[in-house]
Image (cartoon, rainbow, N blue to C red; front, top):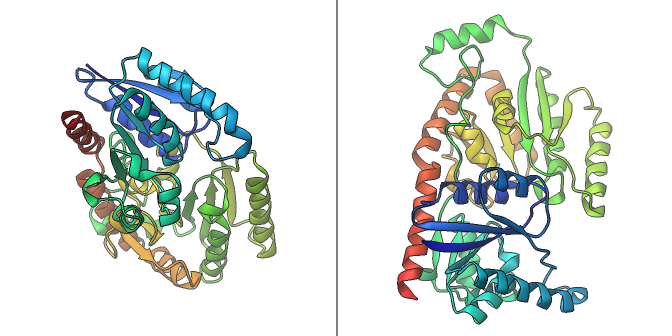
Length: 383
């Protein structure tokens, strides 16, 4: 039995990275691997792991590079190394590359292989700052995420690109009877359904924490451009801001922008939702301006996706088939694509069906986990 220590960025909330880590540790070959997850705080994600019978430990891991953490970080690292040793850990995998210094500390003291997961677009400077050269293996979620690693001097052979996954049994197309269903219902029937419900609003959503990186303000700009042409649309901002000054300020700015454009009746702040499969079924179209596993969730739910060329977006969306990959600016170009689908529900349904097929082929948990396990085996055989 191979004991693997996982480091999570968060234990108190669930974002895309936490979802992907949960998929991985709950679907590992448990006859071969024994996972132990370390979370820096307690809460909903740690509870989910414990509920899935995944051994979970809470251990505060202060930000390594902050001056005020200089003393605390070494104490935390020593505790982490002791924990790894006590559990006979044979490999460490951090789900967040900002924890690389802790991973390196363990490697240096226990002489075991370490893996860092890159879920963001880094700069070459960040690659060097977080010492990716010290990692034995790196998993990037897209070729775009891999590029700055190579530019910073990391050997390409050390990097594996593994796309995010989604639970296809949970994220499914809407039941028969909804316009956006992905089934064998003939297009003529779907067209009649649409004709008989002309007042049903077309729902467009953006999902993620309300923060600058997710670009909800740009979503409001897009909504304004769409609403000027189509009144039978509604926009859902799904997610909430963390209790941080920067995020609270940004959330206020988003709401102020909604008021400025007089879109209070058209834009709904849905808040944090824990029922994402249902959320996806409620939408007709997903907009993402920051990439992430939400793309796979929407596509598995039979929804087309419009995204910008960041992260794994261009590798997940088949342009003009399952959605579109668009430049971030001007927002009017994105709005024009949305209007196309609002005015042509059959095209929207067709793209949604194609999205589901693509998700089944490319984003299954089994495929993802097997590729990660292949990385583990390659490392373990080399040590």
